[in-house]
Length: 415
Image (cartoon, rainbow, N blue to C red; front, side, top):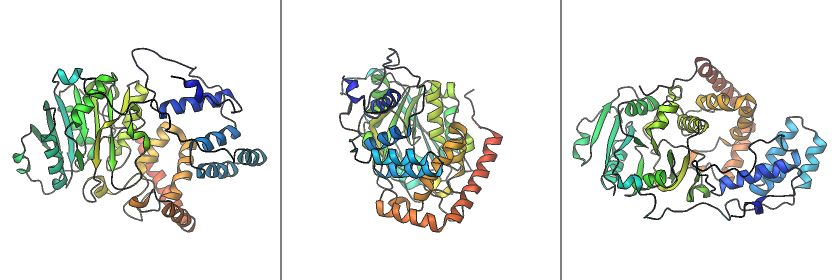
């Protein structure tokens, strides 16, 4: 594999070229084997990229709008305006290179590979929290009935009101139902995991549709890559465009509790989900980052996909938000306070402010239109008009995040 062909000598410093090369390797599907150390370059970068290199990187790998956003950021953050303008103009003719051309990853694992766990007929525990979604839960339970791998049990944490006690009698499945009166997503998952004893746990949302080989493909990924986490991809008919890098195996940069399979040892080492995120977003992202920092190998698995229906009623949407940036009510904190709790905890205040600067102006679109350029432009105009309201929403969210940070994480451990 000729990795050096991606080493761009036109960067002002070799450090910048190395950072881009590392980025491209990960995005194109390079996966290391954790049992055989492989290190092409030093892990240490001894200097920050210069402004001209930042512009070169953005021009080559992203939409040109990001170069403009970075230009405005540099001006408003009082970087040398002459240097910024020179760098912006100097790189303006650089053409974007398709990021996912020449990928290194596999789009599929052959049927005869990675079957060690399948042949052992190891018992899996599937954890599904549900809240006022019996119709969609019915569909996903039918999908689980049709799985080609049958060695699994299910725990459903039912928080619905009214609770339909006889709902589960019609399924040919081994289902354990835990009744939870108060709807709490993260404590629900934690309780189910604590009360299980299986070596491998699968996490699933109630508004999902699955292929019949969903469990098999997760097991193949764990076995073939000797991974600790198989991070399944979630394809939605609502919201943003499906990323191209969802189509092949790669080091995961996402962890979705609506579609994942992992070893119990990950929870034993990292702890369970942080219940500070109760009723809010980013609890799965925080756990995924915690697992990564602990050294566990997580693989994005395109073959263990699910259709995420994103039902309007029930679940977190009924609790108050469509996503991290879009509350369901106008007079609400923006972004969701847990987003700032997560960002400030792991990345600090400065990077959190950058995140707000880049994302908040584009958050005034309807969820279903968030990837449409016209809607984004309209959102940008609205954000200028309603900037006083947005600032108040951000301050409100920031203060709530302050309280969360002050009280600290609420991460149970497996006894």
